[in-house]
Image (cartoon, rainbow, N blue to C red):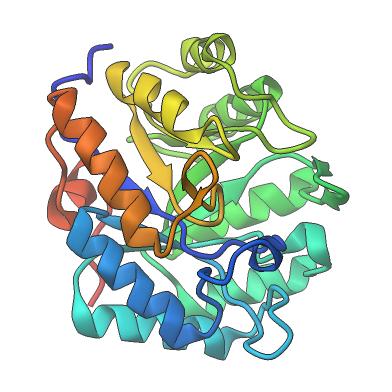
Length: 281
């Protein structure tokens, strides 16, 4: 709990690649909707946005570079929040390895997710072969893209540690502990504690919880000194049976909890400094 007095980095994940749009009319789909929702979340206190793009007509996850570029450019016009692109792009739903690589090469974001293991993911399979993971990690080093390692289970932390030993992930290490995905570790205080204890010394970690246990476990993560992620990618409810009408509402709730716990909120400049991210032009 040594980071309890550090400022809290809040990430918002507005859209994701799953079929949440079938359960709520409020999830943003088109590039302008995603960008507008991200900026609203920034104004509530989010300093990082995790971006997935979708086909505006079919609502399916899309690897189309032009959609990502539109989202990034529209956010950049309005604020300086840290932009993190997915490198899964909807892989459990049919996006290929080549398309995922192309997105990273074409956009060259300042921050990107790095998934280290193949796993069952919901009703699909999330493919991340070891050679592909190493290739992505090397590309991130080459293009000065900060990786955030997504750990959906205990073994994924071990794989991350192997990449650190190989020099493919450098300090400051950023890890997200993802609980609640069908096929990964399930959400409980015990599981979150166990994951945190496996992290290398000095790693800055982020709590991500999918589903109804989100806010209770994010609160535990904040008490322990971790950062948090909210957004409709992970959870569409503001409270029991109450749909969030925007991602900004979810950010606002976690900000209120953080303030009650005495955690100050980091702005984008502070988040970049804490994460070791160079501001892009």
